[in-house]
Length: 430
Image (tube, rainbow, N blue to C red; front, side, top):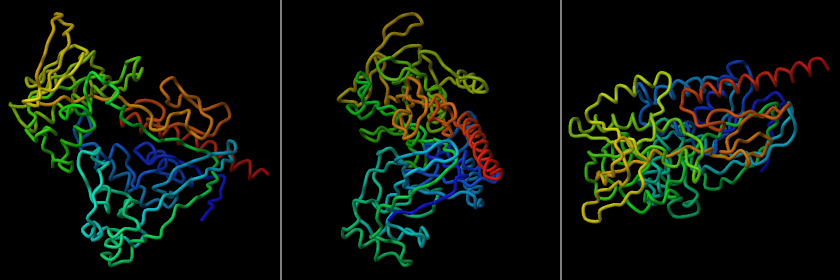
């Protein structure tokens, strides 16, 4: 089935994370029609997977809740989830985007009661906890999911589990006959806000990620600390469930490295400083964090937070690029080898757990975007071509924290608004 949404003055926003939501809302609240396209079943992106923001250590739920309330109350925004833009043609003021929408197998009748989840038996790796645990194949992505509707994993469509989910639903919401849909959306301008993804830590072979259970990434650690995460907020080792009270945080894991990511990912230092406070909160005086760093990049208002952590007796800083990690087969402890460049002495330090402050890379490399944009050497969108109506926003343009991603997206919305305003004036003049 092929549908069509036809209006040249529409702004198409690709990506429904904090950047895409911001761009869509800023444009919609200026009276513009917006179509917001997100490939996952829910909005919020990686921000929804954070336990807390830095430097105030407040929960992302507050910011997301405000944006979701704005979104629900604005009729200018149409949201398409499980949707991907596969092609964009045309020119500034008159683009046509092809969007493929995957089946959700759950329709608008869903009340999020959870009966389908309780009925099915199959489990799948939980992508919202980075695969650290399993979830039912009928699921609500998370408590703040928007739209607030369940999803059936395609693996159970046409199976007994799928029929169980359908039979359990009192509202006729489970639709196993849903098919992939294709839409063509005409838009005057496009905002590309597809966000970032963690660099593949397994490529950093000396650190043993994937080989040693007690070497994890910073995004995984964030989920461990969250009460809604795979361990209920308990900071424990994946290998044996032992409380991880002595933790190593390794900076620039994959960043600032010609063999991996050339750029600084900006958020990593602050993420580790923040996570050291999770350890302190969980274990009090028994919690110890060691931060191995090249240099700490805590700019602007984050400097105060850095100074606060520096004074914490439970946090030690070692200026060193860790050379390699091994895991003790008997104890499960990870042993870090390297050279402390302040005093220049070698170390072999033992920890319960090693956390790699992993680098950021664009979820969709600029070269793979189905429109003409200018790419930098790291694959981010460096800028728009002269006369183009396609604009990058948020972490599609650079490694940014939430605050700067929001600023970038607001700027992109303003540029897009200017384009569609010119379209409207040209149509009036003709």
